[in-house]
Length: 427
Image 1 (cartoon, one colour):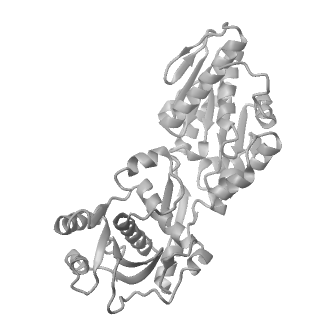
Image 2 (spheres, one colour):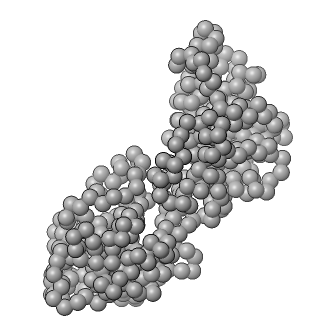
Image 3 (cartoon, helix red, strand yellow):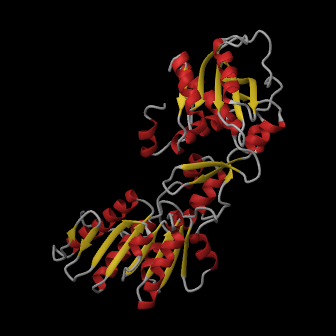
């Protein structure tokens, strides 16, 4: 790293570093340099006097990134000191000539229990077992060691929110994207806002808003523009293709739903929705096979079946009978569900779907909830006491069948590298 003449820290980062309070907490927007600053503070503490300094991150990947930031700071300081400062670096630990250590690890209660030293918790709102971690590390404060917490928000159902909003004894720092830009961060706020699409996500990720743990994925206005008399639950007579089927499998607690789409140019029109409750699997299989065989007068081109849990056997047998190109076995995971959900939502936003004016279907779509997980991937659930999302996922699977059959390129939000690795065979 070469020496720089311009300041490497912005005012809000300097304020954090100059605050030597025993306990500090920093609520900050994404990508404003909080992890960079936390790593630098650990380096400065280690240089100030012999000490052990533990940086805990939400995941193994993030802990490695923290260590990279620590090493970047040390190499910069080494240049400034004409090589006087030397350190031994390994994957998770750096040792300094004065005996200090800086350790970067993924968060775990076992990691902090019994540790004596300064503790830095990065993206604490996303730590698994946060309450156990806090109970295990808090006694270190009785020995005078420092505690630093930093995170962007992740709803209200986590310890970071509780500590920020209720706990005493902390020196508090808050940096929204607007604060950061005002103090010199070079980003285009309007470009960021347009790219994120979801107002709730913008408020949480960039404006430090603590939202409810999960927010509605589809709004009434978005769905309303696609409710159409053209769509129907009962297939009309003389139905012609191309027709695509999605099937979400349940038994007693959840419905089994089959959703039939007809492609009309760029639009997709609902031409049939079957919901089965407490039906034995042979009856579910009988209906599916009748649709695939065309004995009901409905020439289905491609079907995508939920091949998770209860649906594994049904999907496997159907694929063997009708061929794997015609019956797609979809195993739900976080990243697969994200693609399915974003595809459906994107078509709703563009007004390219025709949905029946059916109360059960509308409540099911509006009941889908979306939240951010600790790995950065989205979680999709339902509002407590409401629907189970069976109609939503059957419709999403049907659109996936259309995509695979017609090789249509749907627009959806970008996913991270991890998601793409998992989805190579799915897309």
